[in-house]
Picture (tube, rainbow, N blue to C red):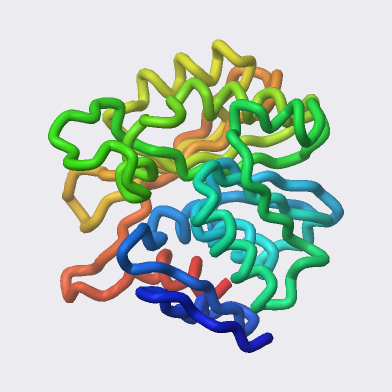
Length: 246
């Protein structure tokens, strides 16, 4: 672990994995539970190459690097300031031989990185497709949450272009967008293979969904039991603790 100087409003948070830490800016955007759940849901096998679209702080490539035995991990981020912060987190954790962060528009990812060249693509994309009510449409937080610089279809199209035949796309999103998600996946020849709804508590309406799709895979969707985040006492359930500890 290298020492690194922090900028104003930056902090380092412990990822509880291999001693890794991550730089975050509390005035910009910090990663949430959705990124952690996606890193537990995604599977990068030994020797595989993975790309994370809209990597933000770089948390997903760093967690995947810690949990899996992939050959390489690339994080793509359109916001230059966020990309530089993620690069510093990679340097701080001495992972520059494993992870590369690129300041790049995901719509140009396949042209820049190579078409049909990757085994796994992950993404925690903007969830909201309506921008009404935002004070600053181009603030880092707004860009991370709303489809301002890319749409759901842009993300799915980029993933399909990057993946080899049989490659896997893993995404976390919101259940109210499921119709849009399935429509876009099939449009770009990514067949949904696994889905898991996430509930904040037992009996509560799901507020997240985890999806795995295979490039040009055969139609057959496996729906996993819901993942419940908190028990009745407000503590993480055993399933969530396993994601943090596995």
